[in-house]
Length: 137
Image 1 (spheres, rainbow, N blue to C red):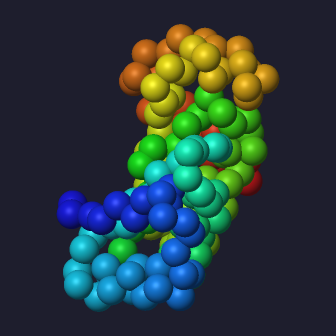
Image 2: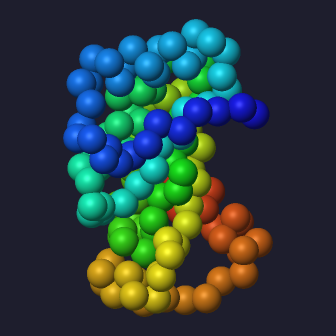
């Protein structure tokens, strides 16, 4: 899979939306397999909500996969996130790839979500995610 990362943050300021959408269409037209976008709550530069941005990408493309690179779970509530993920996957026709991570210093960020950190082996996380997504519907 060969993809393009359209940054979630914009050091020079938020670009013209029409130009950003033209780039998305161009990426699909050129035959790339995926379009990725980053995530964060607050950055040193403007950043848009990754799920909203990817939903707009899904609406103007037909083939290319769209994905988070990476979604910072410790900053979000898992039930609301599961609903967003399931909705975006449905609206995109199954083209959504959910890249998940904890960020840099996750132990400092986990309390922001109001959640309790529970260590889980990587294989258990993979098995749990489809259940969480389908249970939301």
